[in-house]
Length: 466
Figure 1 (cartoon, rainbow, N blue to C red):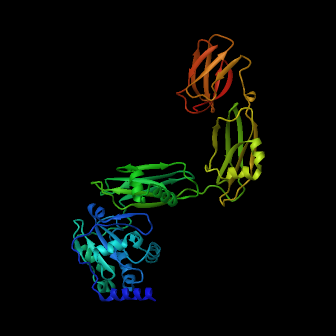
Figure 2: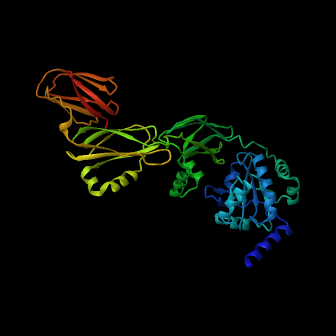
Figure 3: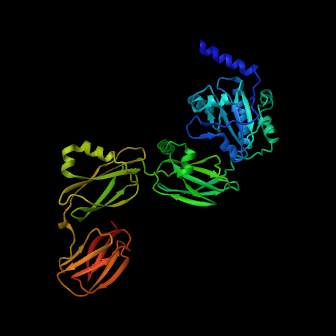
């Protein structure tokens, strides 16, 4: 009963006490919005040249419920916090959960600071006696309006608020006119291309992309809000710029976060653009084809090819003896817990394997419904005896794989022609060596990949770049 009586008393005060602050100069404050996404500092907003309109309210206040729709309409008429005026609301009564409910119920797009985010200290600093109280502050920190007449707001609607702000030179803008326009040019399963076009008031901007969960995780890890995260860790650009993100996850909704700055380096309100990668896979059974080529006693080259039903897949290499000792279920659990999902054809050289050892290459994928498909298992042995060697002419080429050079050794001596071809048959290097018995060839200028080395008509496969 005590709590109910207190709320009733507050509601009565909201009707009978003149709702205004006694201040004529703004008091600085810092608060966190009820979603934990943004830290609001009053003087930072004022210093970048924006006016600030604060709506002091609480959720069970009937006049506040009436006024909020008018405030939201005015917020949209002035450009959604992107231009001359920045709207925010403060409550010293409601926690973050209630504030979120309030914002969603009434369509509040501007920041809401509840008691969990510092609302109590802000209310006390401004000495708000009744609700709602709408306070307008100018960039020079003067309080232009200590409150707006509630009866006029109720009778005339948003137009009354608009008229009050326009008398101070605050101009209306469209919410559709962002400070930085983000145009999505193209999306694929794993790429997103966007073009950024800043407005005249934007001198530079930072941008990042991520899922909402990823961005919140990073912000938490660095103990900053999302806006600070984007400003400190995003890509900084000026002028129109086109960017392509690669290695994104198919079937996933991302958010592009943009933090603009004015000519003085002051941060403007952060903007968000939603974009989704294309849907990959079907509802059928996922099947992964595996091809394993032994390169040496300790390395193999694996090609994994998913079918059209595959949305994502994983594969592992595991020693046969170990897989059989832990059983099928534990082996598949290792594969399912692999954090590196694949989507397209994957070609990869596995090194540092145990020599002359039996292995399994195991793959399994999911369809678009997240259902695991067929299990593919390929057995192989890491053995140099399976490799193609230039036995006929007693050639030996090493190391394989190579990084900066290859050595050619032979029991024979004399001149020889050496040609290096990529896997499409394109000649990438051709040299003549004076003594085939002991020759070294520089390959540091050749891109990473698998190549064919031809020595006097005899071929050898080699991997370069690892």
